Length: 439
Image (cartoon, rainbow, N blue to C red; front, side, top):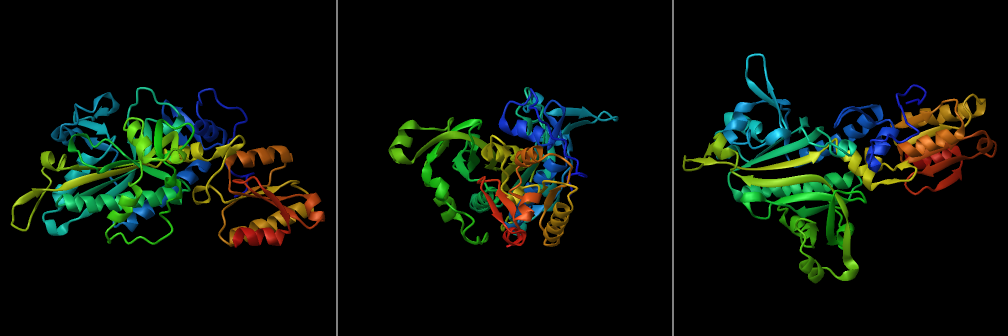
């Protein structure tokens, strides 16, 4: 993509309403624009990032055997009344009445609807287990939306729902999602630490939230430093095998948010030199809730003896539109965003330091064509602009690599290749730079 043709409305100044780093940089880098309080339009740069995040989430869900569906944003209030949540949910739920006087709502979550779909379609325990997920927009009318996409009112979410015949089956489904979440965040360049979360009246140990370390996180987290050494991508995962050893490994060390923190246990279990106390951002939550919805909504299947049994369920959420903000909070510097390669809007920023110069134009066009031909996503800054603003803008938007071509370097037979993550710049021939990028 040529930057002269790209819609990238960057800002030099930080808008006054932006209180945290991710909100500031997403506005300044032309990723989003506010439509109203807590509601944002996603511009091309931001939308590319969000779609890459969405695809990683989708691939890891599919790898577990989960199946993608798409449920509507508008739901009937009747199902929520059956589950008992319509009145309990409070003012965060946006309630609507259609022209026929039917009570509707803009779904903040989908337990009721997916349970109704399952109930109408599955009759026997032989058809279990099932895990259905979708990636859809949600709305929760927050009293005080803030921090940009980190705490908006409208948000894109992946929510999955598992259905099993009994608790042991539900644990197997839960473990699949636990491992899939570790892989999902690792593929995005994030180290997510599973923390035991409140399991409510269900009790038990099957409720975890996944936290990434970030200076501006919402929660204080306490954990063992060895978590940062754990690797979930280093080996292939057979999701049909027993995953409990992996779950046990990732839950064997101390990790807790401030509301679950036990200071005495932390000091007893974690050596002083291994203690980490840091801010964290929740990026996912998985939760087993038994028959909480299947009982009131009548989601039963016939067991081997012919008797109806309420299915055991779990839900598994990832805030897809929240993730770009979370990644920025964990990966930035004073100059701008530092995107991990897997979610970067473009992999390479090609900078022509003197557009209009015949030699620079020819070298840049050659590099641009070769990178595109090899399937590399390139943002080519071909504008007639001074080098300073070009460098500043490319650092702001945070592409992993910058290939810098100017007249002085070409005379010496070199170009510059800069790593955004390390800040290191290397002078080498254009062919060597292309080999490095395409190798």
